[in-house]
Image (cartoon, rainbow, N blue to C red; front, side, top):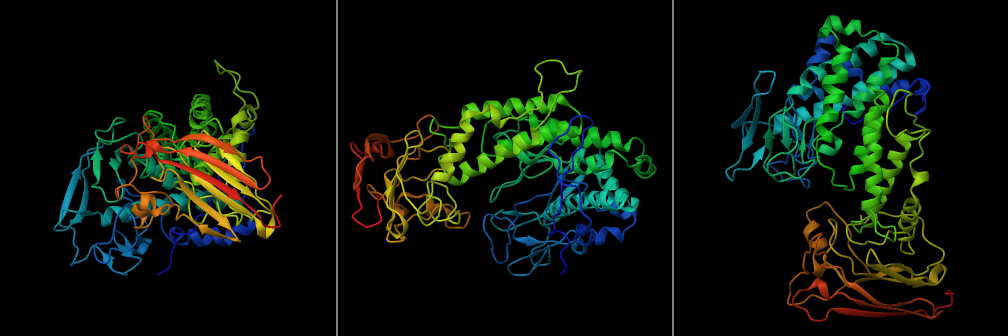
Length: 538
């Protein structure tokens, strides 16, 4: 089947008079064929038919296949395209759902503020597990038409053809009509879906912040910043009265208030928790504020960014979760925040603390250290040292020389020396449990002779996830066939560095007390010596 939803070519073009901001390059003529391909289906529809393609209820993202059980974590199991309507097709067994074998045999009715009932029909198996096939089709349709609106906006910027702008504006305007009635839902793999009233902001009973979402499946992505980019393409040139005759009066005003600002308000109502996803939220807050000329949004995003820097990093520069992959993700996220705010200046009428030609990273000394430690945490073969939840495939260029590294606040050290083929490294971890940790205190990873002689599986989202975090899968000592203690933020079972010496040319040593890992252990300790007698060390 021909796919229209897989192609996402979307540049957010931002322009504010007398206040230049992060501006993507102007759309180029050579993008037109690809952009036209992505919107081909919509261009064959009338404006009324385009409007009808916008889902009137919020979809469900995590849905598994009851027939073949393919995939992992109920994520990206199904394909969808416009011709399927409210059906989806399994990527693994090719069965189309719902069907006579797996029919919609249950339903939940949501009564939104607008007064028109929304029916969520689903299949429930004999064990009580729910499969929202139709609502997943709505979610995929939401993704598709959201991205298509971005492509339509670009095509209008490139060609000036109003037929593109009309369809982009129709999608925006329709979203503004239906979004206030989108139910809040808890959408998480292998968990029952929970619904909350469309008008209810945080808190949501039984949920941690950002787990209840109105726009996306996750609260961190709930600011409709993609649609803000579409609006930004249209706002300085498109005649919105063309849409008023189709969707009703004041379409542009409703896009601003009932879609963009409403999405912002729902999202920022969540209390701040300073997680690895927070920088994405700050970026979207600042970006939307600049598009809407709202300094309060920009200042809120910057204030959260500054507090995040203070609370999120160890003294040695590591992101608090103690994993290379999430450290790198967080650093990239912070760069995105800085880019979104680069050069921002408050308007003259703004009262309070003022920003002039803003440069966030220039004011954050710890950021340079954070960048450096992420670049240093690599094995000689270029693989990122698999500390805790570090993706197995994270890799960069191999090193020519290995040196020792000590990160005492994180609770990790890499003893190493040698050059070229004679590089050696032994990594030992004694970090606590901060959210993406493994139960592997005193675990070692050893590299020599050009390969990982004692390795680590690292991070996975497959069905082997449980094994990868368990103590027995690591190069450490298991007591009484039990895993190490899990720990908490208040009691993270972090070990203690007793001795470290990397000054000798031939011998590097370390002694770690990892006793907090096992409550029943009086002593749980590891002492290592790395001796390199090869020709290439120095």
